[in-house]
Image (cartoon, rainbow, N blue to C red; front, top):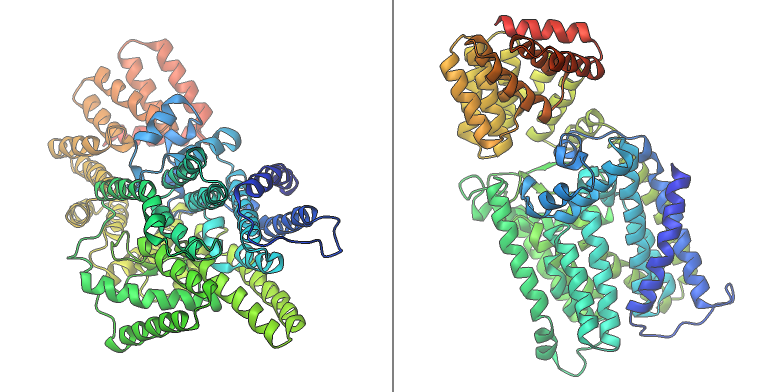
Length: 627
């Protein structure tokens, strides 16, 4: 797998390098330092070194599984993605706001992986690794051509390649969108350099096209026009003539794209129930968390320890001293950057502050206080400040060799930490056990660890995690849903129904609501309250017309009422949505009753193909029909 990925990267690198050479603006001419016959050959060798470092560091992900943190929704349980790059999938991708986002290119990326690798996680992981390697190389080439500083650019790109904060974006399959949008973001920066060198409508259109592709991958790159104004200041140095107004006017078409993306994203996130209300997280709490998060991210840039897949939101007001201290520190850093007037410090600092705005939590999406993946683009600015600042200081004090030796040690330390961090992403149990070890009151981690234990058949251990989540956050709908499923499994149907009703009061998430209605229907059916069961199943189908539990439940009710033809229709719809051995057995028996023996035999044959234990599937079908 590593050799195949390396071959892919080598082929792509030639395209990326040629594109970057043509798209970037060269500020300072470079000369060969004697090690290579030409600067171009030197750049190619350094690109290959960067790609090799990235592939070697992330090679272990080839042995990692999917995790139960959106990988199921994005890939494993998403039938649209399983179909590969069909016309239906493409149409769905461009029209869907599933997962509270409009990111059609991300969906198509996953669909292409499914077409090539099916559900083998190794292939999906390596696509992400290759994208990260391409981003590393693009970042190096763009910086090198724009600043004329080869070794500083190399150091920055290397740190970006191996920094542990970026492990989440690379090792988490569902976060493909972060890598993809950054790829187009960097291509857009390169295209902007090409445009600046010789402005034309065609070259500006290339900038806008890459920006649009980035927005169609993940809307976080809405700050791209702001970033272009920063690079106008340094390293492109277009603001020396005091033409800020003209430069701002030049960005208006791109700002229009940003505005359109903001509107689409807000609509998508509200429709998906992802945006938290001011009742759950007040504006004051959001502002306090944003101020503190800016400083916490800085700490993780310098000392990347205790990294977790989820940092729980405080929900309540933070200590006044903590908020005041972080606000003061932000003000001091900003004042120092402006006072020192080093262009790379100004650009790096405001790059960090600005590109973090969409995800800093002022508009709260999800229940996290911060996330490692959000630092992928913003930390480029921090790395510029550190690398250029240390290099300038070392050069002035004659400490260049010491700085180089220290840089090697820093890269080695970051690589070791990143290697350890990748291991936490090998499976769901490892991921959430680690999150619980390094965070406090993390109800999301308890929920997801519980789900991982359920998948292993460790139900009593799982419910302990769900109850721990509910104790931390009584308004957590996921723990209520899972406690209800446990109660239902153990015959406490009334208790289960109370939990499902609680889910419906707590959340507007369509997936959780559909599951709560479907599970309620199953519990009512166990209690022989078929009218309420039918109502619950129908409510689930209004939200998700392909819900397999609701369809199967309605089939069982239809069969019990003496309508095997209607039952067969429901079973057929259920197995079309989610094939299962039990579903095909039920379909076969209903078809037998309707006088279709040939179709019944075909259904039984499908049951045997899909079942690991056909006798167990038959016994499960018997149990369902006996209720």
